[in-house]
Length: 329
Image (tube, rainbow, N blue to C red):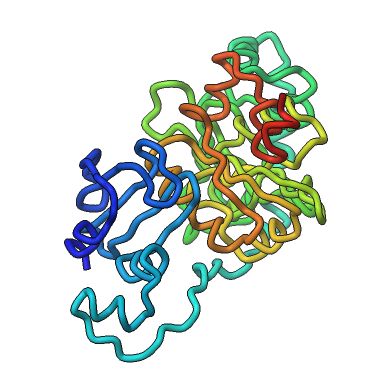
């Protein structure tokens, strides 16, 4: 169905990347634009997606949506033999719910967070604190998030964290900024933003669980914004205040457990503000397929923190996504 997809699309496309065997871009047959319509004709599952109107599908979907063919007519046009009318499409199945780390892990984790927080605000943590100021964070935001600093690489015994040698030979805590993930009265995750130049910029301490950063901010019938990184969530939350809950998944494939999907389903509206790159564009549709009230709200460039450092009015940008042009002006 790959080559067939290119043959039937009513728009001119240019190859722009090698993603999934070849990525093509052009104007959207539905909403226009210049290069918002993306097509992957040679992927394992060929398909298209528009960043503007969020149309998505494969060759059969296109013929049904754009040319108004029936399923059988579309299959005949593509010279396929349909076995039966397809069942309604459903989004991907969220991962099963997972629990917070064991009580020993959480207890020792809080000890480490307190220790790292004190070190951050000491004379020895001045360089780490300057880094957070450079990211645009205020003292109030840093303290509220319980950010801390580990001044050197450390290896601790697994049993101190309630783990065994089967889980890990040693619990590695690298030098860097400690970022605790707390939700529902539990400590789910501790991530460390490592020093610049490290091959793995973010490291989750062994035993961490799949949480949702800022989950406690999500409430029923209240808007939410999903970001990729914790610093994106912190700087945006600092800028918009109580206008919307802001959460972070830690990566484009993070926080997909069923309890976090269910929590976000309570929100009145959800903006998926993953980074403005290929990974962000490819993984944002996961949330769009599961949450009826969700839409992609792409950063103008880079990520939210980069926009903040470049002087973008984040509150106006978020207001435009949530309420439209009239409220943002």
